[in-house]
Image (cartoon, rainbow over all chains, first blue to last red; front, top):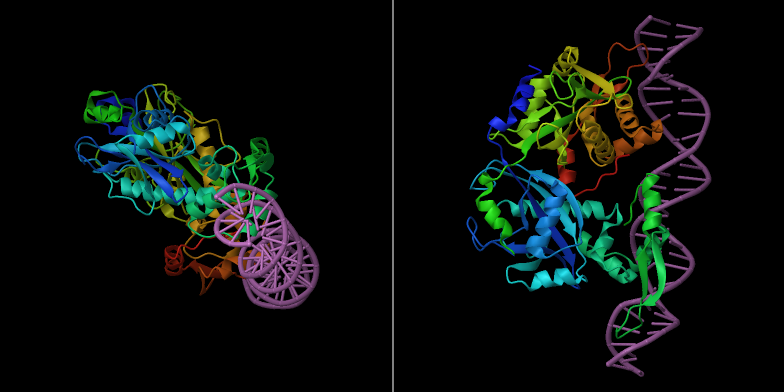
Length: 238
Length: 238
DNA sequence: CCAAAAGTGTTTCACTTACACCCATGA
DNA sequence: TCATGGGTGTAAGTGAAACACTTTTGG
């Protein structure tokens, strides 16, 4: 009994196997909302429907590499925080044949030029997370879980910063949390708390071209973060 | 460019694809330690090495079903809390051919008869998490991540109870947390806190056959838990 | 001078932590 | 009667939340 699968293992190539894909839920943040990047499908099935960027894993690339390649090819995105979060294996999730998909979420800075270029393409567009169309395949479920994971993670690690430019104001940072977590946060408490982490460094610059008092720009102190992380520090940012 | 992968998608079956497997990190708790169930390999590669129970996914079963089947076939385990936690896709993780594995962790009640039967088998054994042998494939890495995830999860959901019988004493529950989190917990504070969650119900039974005052048995109130969960309650059990 | 957002402290309340003794039971 | 773990409360400290006004700047 113990060896049942060893037999299967030795001869795995004899058996039909599912296709293996990656899908990416790409999050971005503009002045309004937390957004997800979708691609309009150009072929059946689900022709014309919006879907997540994604595709099949090649034999010579890891899952992570596959996800990055798809982001580049389908969305013109070169730099993104990328994180695997769940693998979807329902038998009929693709009507053509069995496809198991390793889902990732990605966080991109909309300040990056490359991303903006992608949004100009006719077949790609950003949608507010509360304003998503009906998606192809089981991509609705994938997006829902991605949002859930993002919310859980954003309070416990500084990935929220991946949505912002390198230099940002505390108000911008507060908006990241307010939009990802979908609740208002007290300004004074927020500032006290994030500054108390010691992970932000004040720069000597201020924001430009605003019609009011210019806010100080901060940057993330990666060195301090790595040190805390190594020491097994548990975050509870917000 | 947008359609690069659509082409690959339509003809996915033409391309070589990785084999798809599941592996299970099965946790159990005895009077001493948090343990992991390992199987001794009966064939190459890694003949004689200890490895995680697991095997290939069949075309007619989901990932979850595959993991449950493997637990049944390789370890005689019928009932377990099972949770997918990461998919491992390094290109050379299996020397024979490319195998991508969806890793799960499982929590079993060592009080269950079926599990004890598995431990009697020559090829399967429980190892303390701090006393693991060198494992086959990349299974060391998988176990390490499983422990990490289990620790993160146990404080935020009542999965720790899956390691205990249906009726348990507060001391048993405290030991679950102490062993999973690997730190001592104050008895009075622990009791206050877990009782304050409202998720435990006192039964009118006490433990039997002990050489000291018998402790009250409690059970988990699933109904209360589902209600809290539905209301989006965030746990912080310990 | 007005509009718009930046920036700043204190108080209250809740929760966490630390801590020690008596009780019930079986051997 | 002794050994073993069961069971219980309080005080101090820490961190979270609530809350409003002044400052700076550009238009």
